[in-house]
Length: 316
Image 1 (cartoon, rainbow, N blue to C red):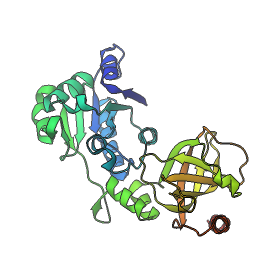
Image 2 (image 1 turned 135 degrees about the vertical axis):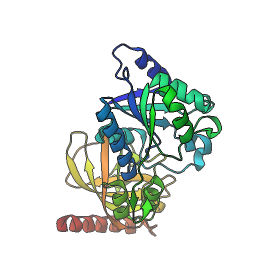
Image 3 (image 1 turned 90 degrees about the horizontal axis):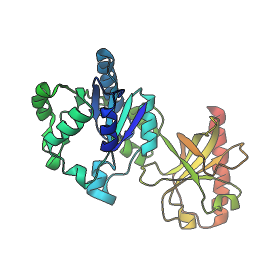
């Protein structure tokens, strides 16, 4: 799969004689946060049309996401960071991901400017798979109807995205986010089509876990929206090995934590993980986050968490 970053790189690629876009492509556009079952169905639509036409499939995404640009710190937290999203799209068989920087200059694109510069001249789009509530261009002036109206003269056709429901409600990133916030891992898994996971690079922490006899690998959560509490997890290392582990996500109230953090203790592991990128898959909730009266009480609970996790693993 190819990643195209920014409009300038899109223009350079589309101008090349050997461009994979020389004959056009089939495109969908959106945030694709979480790449949940609804997104997967859209991608299946795109791939089906692309294969039928002998063209590459393209997913257009934005960084930052539009709501992050407009709302700043008040924007909803993400389910996945950029790299994890890219990896999920790769797993779905997408040929090209176009990532456009959403800034003030891009915000000022008119609806027709977006169609002319990006869809027609840049991507040479032949078919679009788009939600009928999709809006684009300055002041959200462009919509599904404009695409249908312009398409015949611009050389592309337009198709509505299919809707996926679970429990009689549409699958959405908001539903996944709410399920995780409530600690309902099974519900999140049903919406995602896979277990929820966080990928990230291991960073240096305060070494408190080591001092408590439970060394941990720490991952910065940044703007992610994970569940809070203690969980049985599976950790995939850079070399492909998978280790059983216990993860704590939260503010660490007993030690006056200020920012949400992910701390993972791997069973039967020796070595250092600093700088490595790992994947943490959430398998089973053990308990909510609690503020303990003392470090000794916290240490005792950590030992109990390990015992509870190993008992669950033994039974599964």
